[in-house]
Image 1 (cartoon, one colour):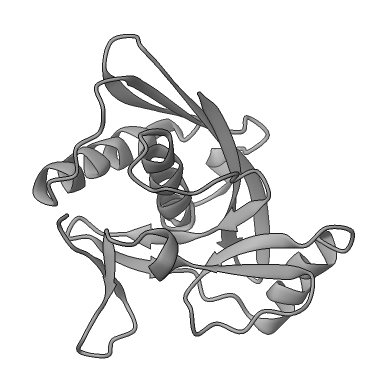
Image 2: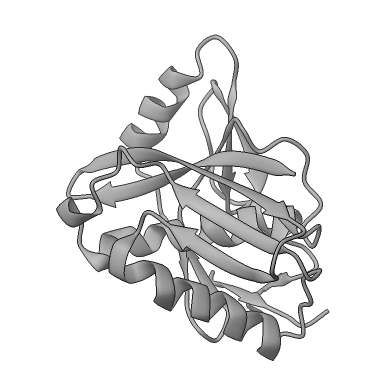
Length: 183
């Protein structure tokens, strides 16, 4: 089984869109992340840690997640590349059947996840949202974003809170951050 989506990396006042694709097989169980050089292992270990601490069990399969090779990860800082954590986790958990979402191929996502499960989605500027919307002029694109975010025509918002539910809940202290909860 394989699928893909688009990750958005903010750098300076610009955005880089990169395709992220993945598949699962019956091979030796594990998770492999390709295309992020030195950041691949820390992200993989974070996902394993989150799975263990939040009691999220993935079927024993081999999962491979790949960031498109057109991304020259040396041109970006680690801080910028960490915005691929959310789309990578979404792809991984989608392949594992934990997150029930259909086709991801026209979805855009960007956000970080810390080791405690706090997710910080990228806060798109109005200009960035209109730029993304223009890319979906013929067929609206889907953006994974917090429910309260307003998006222009040309984008269809998929609320993160619903897509990742029941693994996420809104922070009740009103910080606006998303927290994972155990299932």
